[in-house]
Each structure stands twice: as structure tokens, then as C-alpha cells.
Amino acid sequence: MTCDNQLEVKLERLKKIILDYGQMLTALSGGVDSVFLLVFASRVYEESFGIGFGSENMSALTASGPHFAPDEVEYAAYLCDCLGVSHKIIKVDDILPLIEDNPADRCYICKKAIFSQLKERADMVGSVLTDGTNLDDMDDYRPGHQALQELGVKSPLRDAGLTKSDIRCALKQLASEDSSLAAALTLNNGMPVWQKPAFACLASRIPYGEKITSAKLDSIYHAEVFLRELGFTQVRVRHHGDVARIEVLPEDRQRFCSSELMDKVNDKIKECGFRYAALDLGGYRMGNLNR
Image 1 (cartoon, helix red, strand yellow):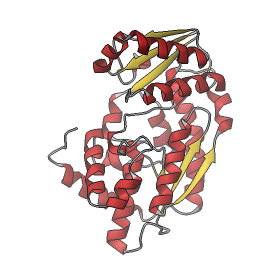
Image 2 (spheres, helix red, strand yellow):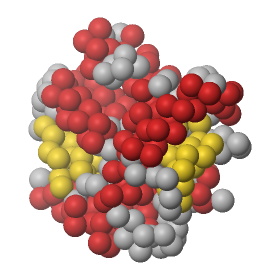
Image 3 (tube, helix red, strand yellow):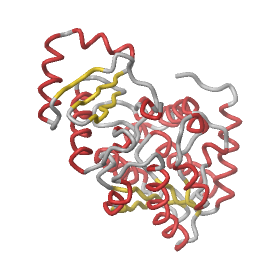
Image 4 (cartoon, helix red, strand yellow):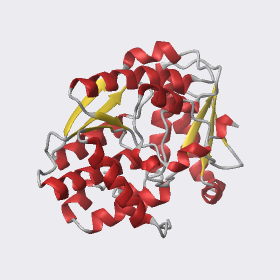
């Protein structure tokens, strides 16, 4: 993790953007980017107005549905409770029928449906709706960004020129200045949030054109939880019918040379509803299915 030499300049730019919003409502997924945005904004409002974390100037919404990991939603609620930020969980189970055929623009359909609901709530209270999109997100195929633009959702991290590395460094820096914040930014497994691997919705594990079902999403989630418990930080379980194609970081592939580990993984993958477990020899790469 390296910090951009211009990080302080970018953070000043981000501060100005946030203050220009007046009132801000954050779409909080529980991932590193939206967590940083929420924490940084709460600091900005406190330093500028002395109104504390619980002010009416900021709030957060988190979407909860079968294609979102439950632990991400739970952490979002926990963080807001720690910060004293008003937070609501919005159930979006009705989105699954809209994307079950899994077209190439699935992310656009999903984002448009979810963020339409969030935007309506933001407009009702006169807040600017923001999300955690950063500059690096522009390098992958993400049709959901079009939906955000159409709805007028703001992406202050991207607009301030912040990369994923910048965000991790800045979040670590904020935690180092406040022990209570550092505690709030520590996950149940002891990992600091700024070290948390990138995570996408569970539907992204299913190849385009293959039907998305709650059962498949549940299988993927529990298989990935198991692999993370084994110490694999960045992991994806791609759903190919009876086959679970496992992706781990290239440097972690050698761990599968252990017969004991392979047996454990194989047994668990079958428990999760698959017939076969396979290791992707190329290892994890962001946006693998998009290729």
C-alpha cells in the first residue's frame, strides 16, 4: 500500500466538495471506499461546524438483498452506530427478478433500481446522494456507473482524484489519530478495514447469461466465508453450474499444494451445493468474468 504524494491536496479537494454539498447522504455498502467517505465526511462536518457525528448534515443508507453479503450490511450498521450517524437499511429483495436473467448490463439494471430508491429518499430530506466510486473504478467494465450518472448521484472520491491506494492510506491515517475510531474500523477477524480486500456483489460471481438465483448466491457466500476463515484474504468463488471455480491471490495458490487443505475445501464446497471444486490456476484478477 503506497500513498500518493499529492494525497493531502486531494483530501483538501474532497473536503471542499463535501462542504459544497451542504447535506450529504451516503450509499454505504460496508466496503473500504464508502466507509472512508462516511468517516472523512463526519470529520469534515465536525471540524467545520463543531456539530459532531450525529448531525443532520449527514446520514447513510445501506441496501440489503440476496446478492449482497450479510456481513457487509452488518458492518455498515455497526460503523454508523459507532459514529453516531443516522443509518437505515433498505431491503431490495425485489431487485432479484429484474436481474435474474443476468444480462451484460446487469449492474446497470441493479444500480438504477436501487439508487432510484436511495435518490428518492435523499431528495425527500434535501441531501445530496453520494457513493464510494473512486478513480480506479474507471478502469474496469462497470455499466452501473451510467445509472449513477443518469440519477445525478455524486462520486466525491472520484471527483477529488482519489485512488484505492489513496483511500486506504487516508483511512489508516484517520484511525491512527483516534483510538475509538480505530476500534470501529476493525473487523471481527481483527483485520483493519483499510486492509480489507475489494469486494463486489455476489451476483458478479455468476457468468453473464446464466440465471441468478437466491440458492446460487447463498452457495457462493458461504463458500467464500469459509475460504476467508482459512486465511485467504482476496477470494472469489465463481459459479459454473456444478463447478465452483476458486480464485485466490497468485501468491496464495501454493497453499493448495497441501492435500489436507484440498480435502477441507473440497468437502466444504460440496456442502455449499456444488459437485466439484476447481482452482483457477491464473489466480484472482479484478473483473475476471468481464474478460
